[in-house]
Image (cartoon, rainbow, N blue to C red):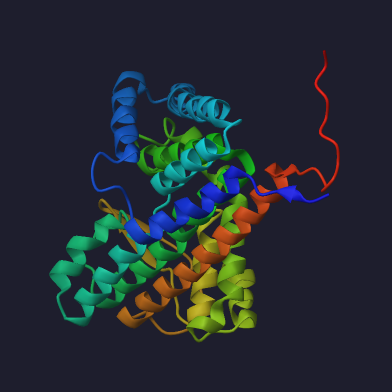
Length: 329
């Protein structure tokens, strides 16, 4: 008995296509509105304790997940409504097109020798201090951001959408946004942001590893080999403070044949990170190759997520000629 293609799977496909064609909504982005609301909640709840941090995380994530669940219940019996709601939510939470566009602009600035423009654009991708970075370090920061955010902004929301529908899409984006806001290793957020950071780590365990495997599988499209990418992933994937980002960055480094990692500075705070890969330092050309690899991973992850949604949520259709079930009197 075949399964009927669900509105969830179709919505994921449409939403991913909208992101590729239109990028993020041009104004009043729902994620930005969520961030503003979370900032107000932080001002109210902040204290230098993990308990307050847990309360803050719950206060921000639970209502978003509840809203997604409510919307899913309202639209569950109407396939078109479910498809449109999922498509809109998917378009809202994905960031693949914006990621590629920002990285490409930095590569173009580096190609033109315009370090000032490249430095000015870098904060849109990562929190690294850009003022003293040279062209090679800007290229490294950009490639690392493309690798990590391919998982965070594309693969993870798609997988959570496939697994848990609208609540999964919206709750994941809330968790990831909170991690970006308060998940830093700073005096203010070391305790308060602990729960947001750990929840984000858990939410990205599977997506980051799928991203790494897809990067290795698709590496021939950017001049690499799966064997080399997997070797770097296995050897260097744990050489990173994050349990997830290192896997993505190591796989990209192996696929592109470059070296990532090293010394990073965030608001004056210096972090020494392990090296990923054993190739040369990245250049602007490698940013463009990383963007190409990210787009291919996006396509593969979209298809995988749609198939997963079909398998998990597709209803079994009645075989041809089978009698319709009778309702009880």
